[in-house]
Image (tube, rainbow, N blue to C red; front, top):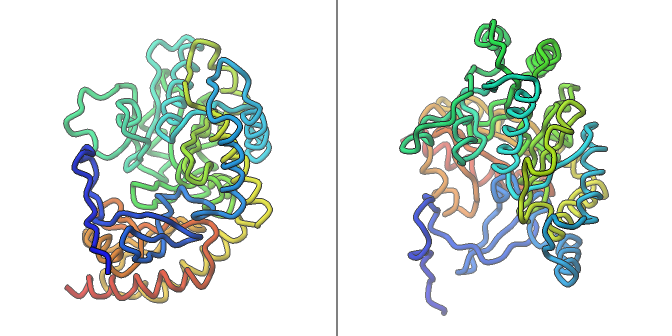
Length: 398
C-alpha cells in the first residue's frame, strides 16, 4: 500500500486557512485527492466550475486552442473576444464588453467607469453607493467597496468616495444620498455571496432601477458569483426584469479558466477610451475559447433549466432535512446558489464535511454555502443532503 501523502505547501505564502487535502483530479461533480479519496464537489471551485470537471466537450476545445494560440496581447484583435462579447451582449441586452482576468479586476474596472462617468459630467469627487455585507474583492479599491470590516483591518487608509447602506431598504438609500450631487452610481450583488447568500428582493431591485433612472446614476450589478446561469437565469438580476448599466462577470464564465468581463449598457459603453484602462492578459485567446465553449455547452445541455430544477430540489430537500431544527435560521438562495444559516458560527463543518467526502464552504461565519457545478443531478443533490444533514444535526447538538 502506498504511503499516505500529507497536504502541505511550505513554500506558498500562508494566506488561506486551507482544508488539509490536496486535490489531484476530477470528473463531473466529483474530485479525488492525492490519496485517492473521493469527494462530492458542492463548492464548484467557489461557483466557478460551471461544467464540473474534465467536461468531455470543454477539455478538447481547450486542447485545440492551446495548440493554436494562448496569448497575443491587446495590441491586436482577438476573434474570440468579439464572439464572446457579442454573445454576452445578446444574453444581457446591453451594448459592449471589456475583458479582464478575474472578478476583482472586473469590479475595479466598474469602479473606474463610475468615477470617469462622474468626472465627465463635471463631478470632481464622484461617490458610489455600496452595501453592508457586500464583497467585491481584495484590491485597495474593491476592498474599500466591500462591507466586511474584517478584510479592511491592517490595510488603511481605504479609498474614499463610498456611501454604505443596508440591503432591501429603498428609504435608507434615499436618506443616505439626499441632497448629495456627487453620487454617480449604485454598486451591489444581486445575491451577496461572501456576505452570506443574501438576496436583493425583486421589488427592491425594481425600485433601485427607477431611482437610478430618476437621478442619472449608473446601476452597477456585480454578477461575479450569482451570474452565468447559477440562479436559473443567465444573470440573477433578470428575475426582476431589469437591465443594469454596468455588469462585472467572472467565476463561472470560463468554467475554471481565469476570466473576467465588464458588460456595459448605453450609458456606460463609451466612458473608457484608449489609454483609460487596459490589461496584458485580459481577453486572451484561451480564456475567450473557454467562455465561448462554456456558454455554448450551457445552451446545448439546458443548464439554466437544470440549475432551476435541481436547485429547487436541493433547496426543498435541505428545508425538509434541516429547516425545522432548532439552530437552523433559514435555508435560502436561488437555483444552485444556496445558503443554510445557523444560529452559531459553524466553520468547523468545512473540515467535517471534507472528512465525510463533501466539499462545502462556510461564509459570514454561520452560513453553509452550496454552489456546485451546474451539471449537478438530482441524485447528487440528494447525496449532498444525505452527507450534510447528519453533520449539521450533530453540530447543533453539541
